[in-house]
Each structure stands twice: as C-alpha cells, then as structure tokens.
Length: 302
Ligand code: CO
Image (cartoon, rainbow, N blue to C red):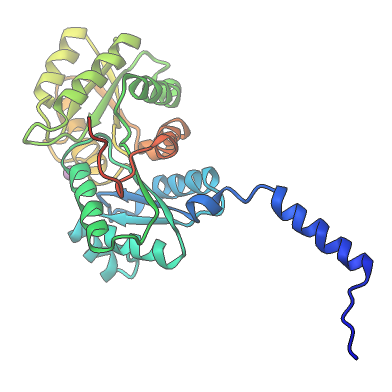
C-alpha cells in the first residue's frame, strides 16, 4: 500500500512559508495595482525643447521608480508633424492605451501646463471621455494639477527662477518673463497673481504675456517707469520653444528683444524652459504625488 508522507523538515518549511506569506506586507502596488505615469503637454516640435522634456521625464522616472512614464501631446498639428519626422508622440487616449497594455492599474495623469487654462480643461475632458469608453480599465486615474495653482506654487517657482537667473543679473538687469496667456482671458488672473508674488520678492522683475491680457506695451511702460536700462528675457513656459525663440528672442522687429532694444534697453535672452530647472520640475512631481482627484470616481456629494 502506498503511504504518502512528507518528511518533518519539509512540513516545517511549508509552515514557515505560510506564516511568512501571512505576515510579510504585500508590495504597495498590490492594492492599487501597477502604477503608470502619463505626462500631458500641448506639444512642441522644436528640437531645442528636448532638454526640458528629457529633464521632466527623468524627474518623473526618479520620483516613481518602476512606473512606466508615457508622454501625450494634445496638439494634433504637432503630433502629425512629429509623426512625419519619425518621432511620434501619442494623444491622451493613445497614451492611456499604452499604459493599460503595460499593465498599469493606477494612472497618474500629470498636466505639464503652466495653469488651468483651455488646454488643461481639454485634457481633463479627454481623460473623462476615455474612461467613459473604457469603464473598469483602470482602478484609479489621478489628475495632477498644472504648475501654478496655489500661492505656494508661485513662491516655489519664483525661488527656482530667481536662483537660475541671479548670475545673469549681477549687473542689476531687470528680469522680464514671457508668459503665454490666452486671448479669451482664461489664465489672466493667474498671471496677475504670479506677477504679484514675483514683485513682492523682487521689484525688478516684470511679467507680460504673448496672448493674454497683460501686454508688451504695458511691460514697456513699466520698464520705462522703473528706469530699467538692462533686461534679461526668459520664458515663463515649460520649454523654450517657438515663442521663446521667435516672439521673445527673435530678430523680427516686433519681437520682445527688438521692442525693448528700440526702447533703449540692452537685452539678453535666457533660452531655457522651466523644465530645465529642478525647482520647477519638483512642483510638477509634487502635484502628481499629491493628487487625490480620481477621475474614475463620481464627485463626492455635499
Ligand atoms: Co502659443
């Protein structure tokens, strides 16, 4: 007759393993599933923007080790252009598809926009539409807010920009920042708030926008009023792309450089996007970490 017996030694081993499995805490991703990061920007095709984008990728990889980091551009024109050049970047839904394929159960969507303007609203809507089409695909999808939300954000960003530009302003040059802004006014008040935070720390700092309400003409009047003779121009944008290179630092007669020069100032441009400043990237990483805004859940009822 066959008698099945397990040696006592092995019986003990099995018991120890069972106990170990009971007491050792499961890896943290077990509860929420594997995590993935989706970084969303308007997009740029300017090759000089690369260092800023690469630095942002690196910061997120470091902050979320083991999580895939995928990019999405909301601008269809830029996506088409990049695809034609053989360096494709996907849309939001393509990015989410890829993270799902990679096995991500929890997604952190991080807006790389400067503020919650039109592009951020479009991002949120695109994610919600995706989740409606693919219910249950992710356990949670957290939306990280853009760079400038709170006064603390503005103060942190001001600190990063001042540290970066201080060596260039040793001669007492004014710092002139170029924000983007939007014609219909969304974001105008964020710029006013940021301007107020900047000037509370350094009165020799000025801010205007390309498309927002605060114009270059106002800026020129302010610089004249302050008696500024020298200025360092820098973008208040994630990358030093088309606006920074052409509208700000370009040779055309309506560029900011040309207008300030015509007004008698000596002008230098700092062609670095905020993505190239560790202090600015830290704000985006913090927003990704802090977000509890899970778009797969219904809003809490009051
Ligand atoms: Co633009």
